[in-house]
Length: 253
Image (cartoon, rainbow, N blue to C red; front, side, top):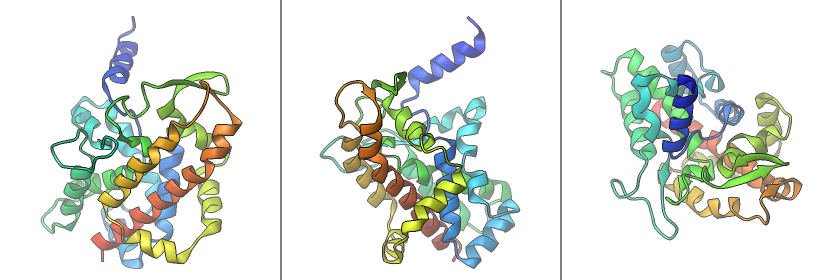
C-alpha cells in the first residue's frame, strides 16, 4: 500500500473530528465576520497579516494538519459535551475552548511576536467557525458523526461530512455569493446580541442543536434532509461569522 494512502487512512481512523466546516463554509464565516469588523479591528489585523481578508486565512488551520510539527493541533478543532452535561475543562475531550482563549491572550499580549500573533489570529478565525458546526461539539460516542455511515444522494459518506461540506456545496454558490445570500435576512438586533456572546454560549448551542443532525429515516439522505436542515445550516454560518467579528472587535478595541 502506498505510504501516503496509509497515512491518510490512519489519520481518518484516529482523528475524532477531521474538519469543521469545509473550505467553503470557513470562507463564508470569514466573509461574514469581516462585514462586521470595526475600523480599528481591520487596521490591527492588517498590521499583523498584511491584509484583513478573514476568508483568505480561514482554512490555514486545516491545511497545516499535513505538517507533522502540527500533529498536536488535531485536538484543537473540537470538544465533546455528552447529552445533558455542560462543558467542564479537563473533564471532556477536545481542546478548542482552551486554545481559543490561549490565542486571544496571545493577541492581547503586547510582548507576543508578530509570527505568534499571525498563528493565533488564523486559529481563532478557524476555531470559532468550527464550534458552530453542531457536530464539532460531539456527544463522545461517534467521533462527531464521522462513524455514522450514510449516503448523500446515493454517494457513500458519513454524517460529519454532510455537515462539513455537502449541505453547503449542494447550493452551488461561491463562498462570497453564499455569504451575501445569508446576509440578505440581516437582523441588526440579533447581530448585536450575538456579537456579545461568549464561547460557552455557542458550544452549548451546538450541543443542543446536534440532535437535529441525527434526525432522519433511512441511510440515503436527499432533498428532505436538505430542506429540514437548510435554515439551521445557514443560521450557524451566520452566527459563526458574527460571533467571530465580536471576538476580534473585543481583542482589537
